[in-house]
Image 1 (cartoon, helix red, strand yellow):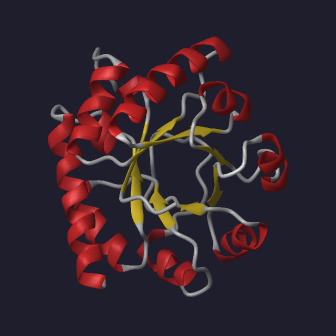
Image 2 (cartoon, rainbow, N blue to C red):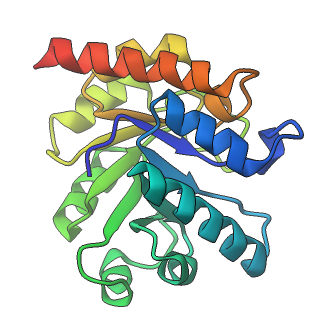
Image 3 (tube, rainbow, N blue to C red):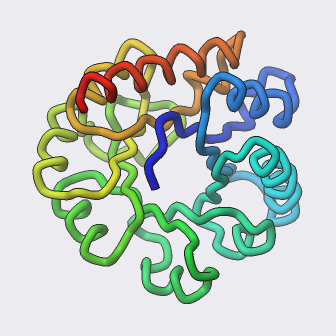
Length: 211
């Protein structure tokens, strides 16, 4: 799975706006993959949000990934799931999902990235790039240097994540990441569409320069 701007939901950062309006604006600005990640939602809330996001992403031709919850991903016919190091093993997820669905794995170092590739992941999330307020159990910072190191060892698409702001994107893509995943840099922006457009344009520019 090769994306460019991967936007992760964050209910706490909606600033009174609806999830639908914020995600539609993010997609209009250039988000090409949306991940439903709401650790505090009940199963019912996740299902409702997932159905809403599936409708929006299907209309826009954008991928929908569900964090952790394979059951929710199946129920809403998401394009795939994203799993952490302590979640179900990748092979188990494959057996539970329909053929052709995407499985991404969170990684924090070369060893985890190599293992994810060996097991058949479709992409890796690599991070955190910087300290982040959206995760309390943060691993040591990877940074652009870590992206370079991982890129030397794997061919999988790398989605850099963790504390990324627009001013960080160019260096991260130059280091070998295929895309960036963001929460607050887009979801919490006063102008969501403009924030997404700015980040997407930087990714496009740097990837074009890398070809």
